[in-house]
Amino acid sequence: MMGMWGNTLYGSGFALAFDRWNGTIEYVLATPSKLVWIIAGRSASNAVLGLVNALAILGVVALGYGTLISIANPLLFLLALILTLASLSTLGVVFCSAFLLSRSASVMTNGLEMPIYVAPGSMFPIALLPFWSHPLSLGPSWGIDAMRCSADATYTGLGFGYWTDLLVVLASTIVYLVIGFFALHNHGAEGSP
Amino acid sequence: MVLRFTDWPPFRIFWSSAKFAFKALFSWLRPEMWLTQLFVLPLFQIAFFVYLGRFINPTAANVAFIAVGNALQVAAFSSIFAVCNLTSEEKWQGTLIPLIATPANRFPLFLARATFQILNSMATIAVGFFYASEVFGVDMSGTDFVALALVILVTSLAMTGFGLMLGSVGLYLRTAMIIANIFLFIALLLCGVNFPVADLPTWLQPFSYAIPMTFGTMAARAAVQGSSVADLAPVLLQEIGAGAASILVGYLLFLGFEALARRKGTFEEF
Image (cartoon, rainbow over all chains, first blue to last red; front, side):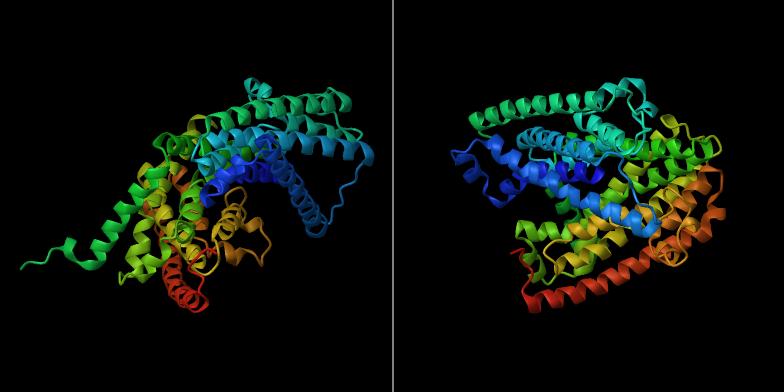
């Protein structure tokens, strides 16, 4: 998950920054295609590319530590993974819209990397964090919980169950997409290459 | 005519390059963004590994070990990542060729560009130790702060030299960013930041001692526990040696990669 997070953050964050540096952002903005779908496509590809990280880590764990990770319910795990990837993609759209306003995308990306590793509970339970930070856990955090529920039948995690987790992921995906749509729509109107 | 030290060409090149690099950095990086990174990055890096450590082994000693190690390692973003990308950034901006074409000595020219990152590293580490003490509860009541300050200074200098060595690769490759990213996390793995070097496989441990930060983390923990400058002298000398070796190797690599890049025509990014 951390690999997918990192890919989404850097890939989406730098999606338009690279266009800006290479002088192609004007062409991207001038196309009749809606900017939000251009960015969503790039975010989705970056999130899926993060699966390569996941496979590499599974390989390292299997070969280096001799441990094979078993999944109790592969179909539910796959469903949770796909929805989590979708949530990550739409979160990337939100990041990109924020970075479009700034010429310091690389600084913001570097600064956001560690907070995003801490908040969602990918490596340790959110319960360890201060209670006031719990509402800050993002949609993909619930996706991680759903994947753990489907992989380990004894896992309790957040305590809301697999299907509730998926509902939150779906809802957050829609919210991020709406935010990203309006943010990029307004960027296109104002013009801030 | 009396020649002053400031007229000495290497110093003149060094000083003008350092001033230029500082101004150039803040022409695109707003101070508030830099300050945000200075205060946010150490907090969350230490938080990530401290909470991970609390999840696995929730003892005060473990938390202190991890917090102090990461307080020092946060400098890697400045000393490795930023410094390693110096040559790549010149390439991106299209200014590498004019720079290489100058008769100016390469050593002060590129060393000076890393000067601000040395100061940035020191500031980042200081913020890291503040968080380690005030947020994560590391007991620094017995700390020898003079020794700790010296450790911070030596580690910042040595790791910047290490970053310059890695950055010389950027002369030949299209970008050194990949090298910078890899070594950023190699430092986390090999330098005794989150667990002792002795816990690594035996065959990996010599590589740990090739990176100056390994000595820095050992010295920092000792300084926090009250070791004086005299007590830390052997470790600090080893760190200085590793840093100096990095700078020397880096300079030789730089000259070699410059010659290679000339032959292959890879001074441009595309």
